[in-house]
Length: 441
Image 1: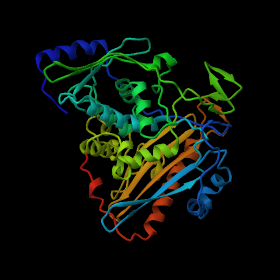
Image 2: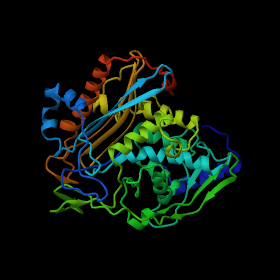
Image 3: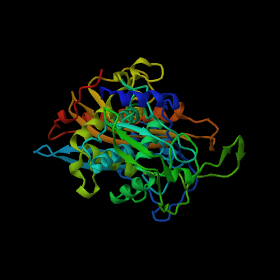
Image 4: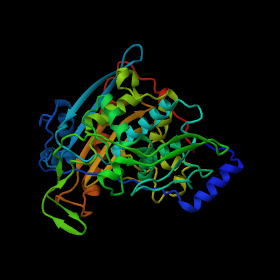
């Protein structure tokens, strides 16, 4: 990612540095609540099978209250067993606990996963050999609420690139990095492409961690790509989306704070992002095993792109040189953003286990979708879960039950399913070398 700059490019970056400094937003994900929600085109029925219920019932010390209050907590779990045929090809078997796409939850930072894949897809579609994930991308502004990016101090040479934004998203769930990819893609492209791939109920219609109007989120910034000599190689003008939003009636909580005032009614989320657990789970499946998805539903990315995403999904912040997360172990510990299996623990991860995942949290909602592998014991499985951690039902009061409820649940769930997998009979052990990576540090 390091490139030699010529005079023109140096001048561009130096001037631009004084206009706008790149920022590194920490992860802020999103939330959900246990009030009535309705989505007109979905049946309000939960999907269950006996296996997950049975496993959870075997650990009452962890899950008794969860099972008792499954609907109030809006707990949903998808567990996919991976069996291998004699030829090594994966055979997937899904198991469900209380999964219900009609019960809305705000997806928080989990929407970043499809945005990462769509950004790589759009680069491929631009079909310009000079425009790659590592090409310098400068972001301008053309409408209210927009901001410029002319440099990135977390890179070795100050250049903002799509590859570097992706690293930030996958390792620490950086919000500003997500917003820059949202602006590169444009709202219309994002949602049109998700619909083409079969995710017709998904909506990604706003930036994260900044509060903009609907019109401001429809509009995305002008963007220019430069080569190493400072020559313009691709220009994307400001875009405006004409997307027709899905007709939704999604509300969360019993009340919420707005501008310091308590509003005694559920908070309206009908024009917020939407990505149900099944869609999130399927997007992860399609990344790990693209051959299990019909071609029209795959993200159009190269094998190098796919491996790049998998590498940085599983790399710990403490293994990162650029961005320099390894120098900040107070804020970024080894298992940061690995809710399933580790919860909020700051312990060192097990050397034989890697977790390829994307988390989200906000408004009391905790979400994680993960592909978990154990190289030593030759096991692999997918696990996705959501839980609502807001016992007082008030949104935006910053009183959530992450530490006492959500993170322990995620940790226990991940470890219980892992232990179940350790004992499960594998007729053919998987070859996990395709997901074995050399990390940056």
